[in-house]
Each structure stands twice: as structure tokens, then as C-alpha cells.
Image 1 (tube, rainbow, N blue to C red):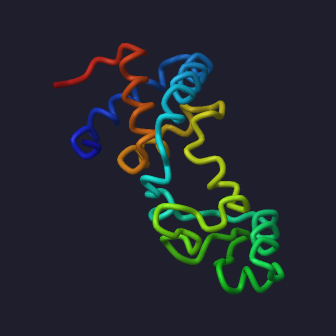
Image 2 (cartoon, rainbow, N blue to C red):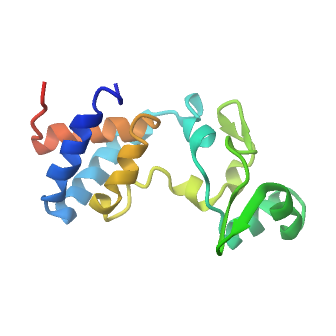
Length: 156
């Protein structure tokens, strides 16, 4: 359905940009609080199979400790560094087993925060959010409910 709604989502993105960002944030957060608990991410795991994960120094230290290795060894084995950035060096994530994270308690900041629907500034992240619309059931359902609750007129 994501491919079928690509044009509609582009229209929705443009339409939403004209709305009060603070009101949109409140509504997105409310919808997210309703939908996210109903989705079992361990039945999906698509984000772990598809996303490029940024790694902070704190993330590297925490994961290295979890894996009982020093941070430099962790980086050599699992991280690509360049331009003052660090990213996981493979997709899917090294720590994905089935649909679950083998290092869940020590997971990276981006993993902890995804899909970022509880944060302010939703309109400023709408491009990235819609990019993941077809991958993440939480994003898909929040966007669809947001369209409905805001009175967005679908083109049939």
C-alpha cells in the first residue's frame, strides 16, 4: 500500500507543512501513544534489517561494554568512521537475530528513539518519516490516522 499511496503522501506532506507545527506535534504524539503499544516490533524487525544506524561515542562505549571488549575493538569490528561520523558497517544490523536485537539493553540511541514520533518538530522530519512509511507499521498507522483526524482529503 505504501507504493500506491506515494503520490498521496507527497500531497499530504505539502498540505501538512501549512499547518500549525505545535498542534501537529500534539496530535502525532497522541496518535503514537495509542498505536505504538499495539505494534509488536519483534514481529517485524524491518528497521533493523533496513536502516543505516548512526553510532555516537556513548553508543560505542555502551555496546563495547555490553560485548565485553574495548571501544576501539568494537569500532574496528562493527563501525565505519568518516567525516566525524560513525555508522554501523553493515545492513542488516550485526545484532539482529530473527526479529530481535541480541543487544537490546545496550542498543544504539537511534534504535532507542526510532521512529521518533514522540518528539517535537514532526513537520521538520516528515520527509524522513514518510521515507520509512512502507517499512514501519507504527509510522504507517500513525500517518494514516493523522490524515483522517486532520481531515486530509484523499484523492481516489
